[in-house]
Image (cartoon, rainbow, N blue to C red):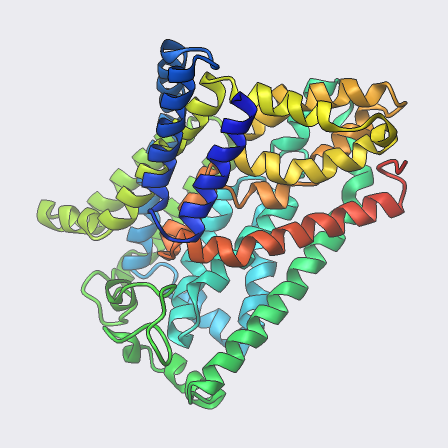
Length: 464
């Protein structure tokens, strides 16, 4: 019964989000709570007290992340408002030569390079801050930006300092280098796959622009005349659900009152210092953003009313992303508090027929995609992977081989609504989560399958 309820909850949740029957925040709250009531009423779970305590614990665990995202949105939103990224935007405009295909491929390259630091939030903040204005000037869909950035970061999330690899190595007591090094060819081909998908997305966007009557020369002209973006529609042709609101476009006006050209070097120094502290990890990330945001607002907007207006201008993004973070805590709390996670994991292991035992590593690689999408990395690597590895050991499959298989699904994991960095990505770009998911999930599966095929071909993961 618990297994059935667990899978049913996930199915209902995904349907409501992708069909746009509910906003992600409401779906993350109402669906788990409804199923939690069923579990407690039928007595098949751990009971009401266990669920309540688990949800409360999850909310406490997610609070630092929500704080970080709250102030990160204000900080980088302020940096965009004051014009810090305007010179970079002009440079990229010249590099892409007015071509949407070049821009989307450049998005994959930039997101991949920044992802080398192992932090998804930093990657998405930098990528969106630098490139979103260019997408808007071209009239391109910001969903393309979020999809490509999400894919690049997902592939590189298997880096040893990224988190999942260390978790797998720790729980199975294997060397991180022994786990990761053989996976490098698959990661490289995964990135090349992202670039290929970015190229195809860029061609699709270029075709849409041309079909709408905008020639590339016209697009280039609109890009060279920044004043043309003030207050107009962000889309080309008919209104689109995945285009941001006009207030975001107006924030790109080169004559906007919030520009602070005399403070560009100060703002650049503050941003570099912030990113350096994030990389060194010597202070809590939330505290770093709180301090940097306060300094940025005081220096750029000395008047209290201007400070307040600056914060209010980003209120929509703040409320959306912070609400989704705490709502995600409810889903995580219900999954663990009701015992659904353990029941579902045991059911999956038990469902594997003995004759498929030698294929356990391949099965784990496939399962890592949906399981890490619906579960946190901690839940998967510390709760489910040991069970799968113990079962695989009966068929002569080594723990390090299971560890390698377990990180295959990371491109899919990074698209999960339980990943705060992904919520930050769609919030900064102001795109609908359902629009993002419809384009990113199947492409993330493709990237994971490419990585798995490479690992299988090289013998990194045993076959049969």
